[in-house]
Image (cartoon, rainbow, N blue to C red; front, side, top):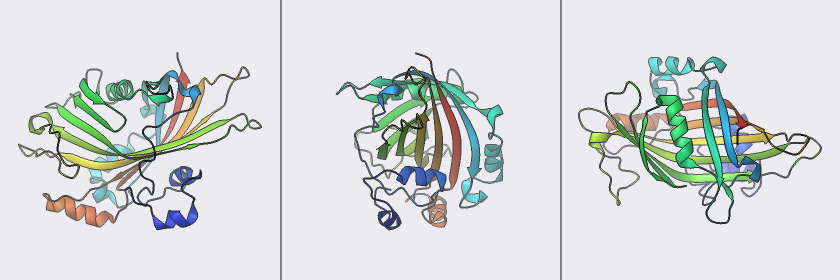
Length: 277
C-alpha cells in the first residue's frame, strides 16, 4: 500500500492536509495512497502525559460481504461490540522522544494496556521489541489454549498538522499508520533476522498464521480550558483491514482476489482521552 493512488493524486496535494479526514469521513475503500512519510508519529506537545481512554465502536462494515469479513458468526459477533456498553477502557501514555524531545506514543506501554483491557489482565507475557517500525509481543489471551506471538510491522505513516483555530478555540491533529500484523501460535513461530515480510512463519497442528494489513486513521480535536490546558482530546478513528495474497494457501489467495484491493473489515470508533498525569 505504499504506491500513490491516481484518484488521490488528482484530488489532493499529498503535501497538504485533508487526505486523512476524507478517508475517515467518506469511508474511502481504496488502499492508502501515502507511504512512509516519517520516522514516527510526532504528536503536538499537549499530548504529553498519561491519559484514560474510552473507545466506543460506532459502526462496523463489510465492504466485500460477510463471507470475506470472516463469515456470519464472526460478523454478528463483531456487531455485538457496537455501542457504549461495550466500550474499551484503558490507559495510554505519550512521552518525549530520546532524539529531540518531540512527543511520541509510548508504544510498549500502550500495547500492554490495550491488550490487558481487550484480552485479560495477564494477557501480555512479554514485549521483547517495541520500536516505531516493529513491535513483537508474546500473548496469552484469557481462555486461549496456547500462547501467541504477534508482530506488528509499520509499512506507511502520515501526519497532518493544523494551525490552532483560535476563533473556535480548537486544536486539530490527524495521523495514520498502515501496519502488517502477523499472529502465530508460539510453538510454530521461529524468529529469524532475515525473514521476508511476505513469508509468514509456518503453522503447525492445523493452526493458521494470521496475516493482514490494517490502516488506522485518527482525527484528533481538543478544546483547551480557559487557562489554556488540554485535559480532554476527542478522536474519530477508522480501521480498515486488507487481505494479503498467499503463495502457500490457495483459499487465502482466492479471497484476496475477491477483495479486489478493498478492505474486508472497516470499523469506526469515537475515542475520548481524559488527562490523568
